[in-house]
Amino acid sequence: MPQRHADRSVVSRLPHRILLLAAFLGGGSWLAMADEPSPLELFEQRIVPIFKSPNPSSCVQCHLASVDLKDYILPSSRETFLSLRDQGLIDLDHPERSKILHLIAMGEQDSDALARRIHAKTRQAEYEAFAAWIRACCADPNLRSAPALEAANRAGPRVDMTVIRHNRKDRILDSFVRNIWSQRMRCFPCHTPAEIDPSNPAHEVPARRHAELVAQHGARMNIFQATPQETLRRLVANSRKPRADRLPLINVNDPLQSLLLLKPISRVPGKDAEGNLLPPSHVPPVTHGGGIKMHKNDQSYKAFVQWLQDYARGVQDGYRSAADLPADDWVPTEQVLRIAQTPVTWPAMSIVQVFVHPADQPPDSPPVAFTQGVVTPRRMFNGALFLIAPGGSDSGATPRLAPGTYRLRVFIDHQHRLDADPTALLHHAQDPDAETVITAKWEEGFKHAEVVPGSQFSTR
Image 1: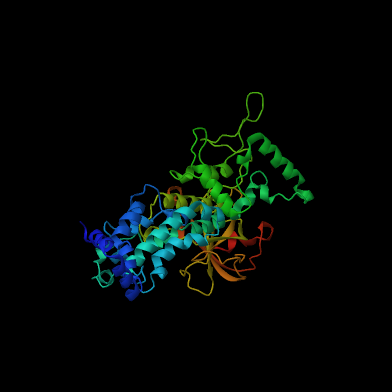
Image 2: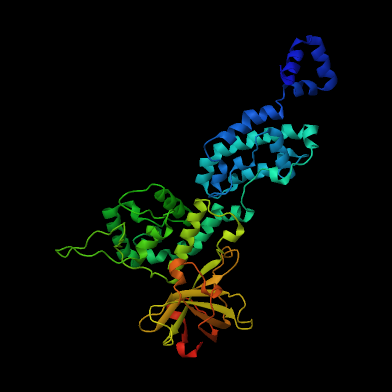
């Protein structure tokens, strides 16, 4: 008979008066200890089922991938406790303050009320199981003072913490806001019902057009919802239900084949023999009832690709270290750079990136903004600026580049690097093709674009 069970049998055979006396002298603590499950029993009863469950833990509420509560559990109760203790995830003197419990409970702070409700039951069960087991372990002096485990034997995610933070859903949402939600008005009014104001006379025709499209094609027209959070949730839900007759809006297996990217760069459908417009296609070659809303290889296309590729790789747990991660530091603005009459050495239809540097810094200092576009047959270049802001945008602040004197450095994609990697930044791989220094107001909107004559650039 196991010692623990034997002790309980002895207790049950003691005369009642001896038990009362023991309870009186010891304040009941001895009896409470006899009835309290051991750390091993709690581990087997409540922690092992979490480890063996085929379902993901509540970590999926906040993370796309890279971390699961199972990662912190080892085969034995003792090893699991020591592993958590040695990593600072358990507070020996205040078990209820243990960091592992804080991490489990973080889902309660999620701003997404629906996600909180969906995961509440799992989160509560995990928290209560770990809290009871940690409390029992911390009450065992042998466990408290046991030698440390070797670092190689400790449990935990097998990726960098930077990867875990990168795959947090709040960061994914922030990136979605900057790279895609910020471009939603390109899709007005067909896919943006929340942007239609019934009280605005100027929206009367757009509202009618939107109603006609919904009547014809259904609620799938409403891609952009009232908030970016709700929009992203619906996009993800849609893309988890593959269909043979259409590409998914977000294609995690091939991000460049996402309808969210292909539709706005596609032309209107052709016509049948009788001259009637054909229905739009949702498989290659994709066509779009609204026609072209952004051009392939412009700054918006680059932003869409950046987010789609990052999301897909995150979902597939494709990041292993900080070196694998994209910078994710692009912040779109409404400030536009226009180069008029580009130099004849810039081939028509070539892809150009322009990087903006403070003029009082060395030419090779890190840029503060960039844009990308195509040289038109009329030798014109237009591009809205992206600020390069490590850590993303400031909350609530309208991103903009301050007026001042700046150096512009131009890079032409001679080697077609962007065909292989649409998110690439050329200044990492080649010397500039042209440079100039400007004093710019950087006002907002295409009507107030900062216009620079091509003749002003010194070229190689």
